[in-house]
Length: 125
Image 1 (spheres, rainbow, N blue to C red):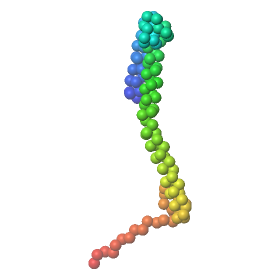
Image 2 (cartoon, rainbow, N blue to C red; image 1 turned 30 degrees about the horizontal axis):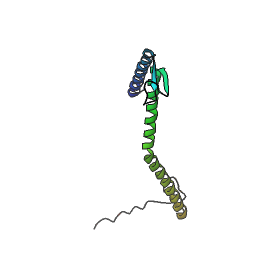
Image 3 (cartoon, one colour; image 1 turned 60 degrees about the vertical axis):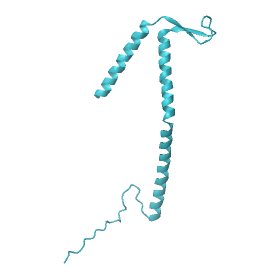
Image 4 (tube, one colour; image 1 turned 120 degrees about the vertical axis):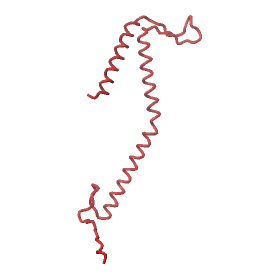
């Protein structure tokens, strides 16, 4: 286990302990009103424990943040898909050219009958 992972785990445990303590300390009920026009007699209200409200808001924030990040990264996912399609197209074209040239090598190695040509110039007189 790396030090970074250990520190992350300890921080998450600490945050979890603080949240549990907050939840235990705030068990009282609160009224959430969804009527901005009549605070005294709201058309729709919800009575729930404060910790449940805080937990719901936190979960909602995580979900909204995740959706926003996913939408923002859409252009990069599209670029990766297009690059992948281009790689497949070029690989197919390379295979076709190799086949037409009579080279059966597909692993990037030169064919066996290919020999490098090394010419040594004659010594100067």
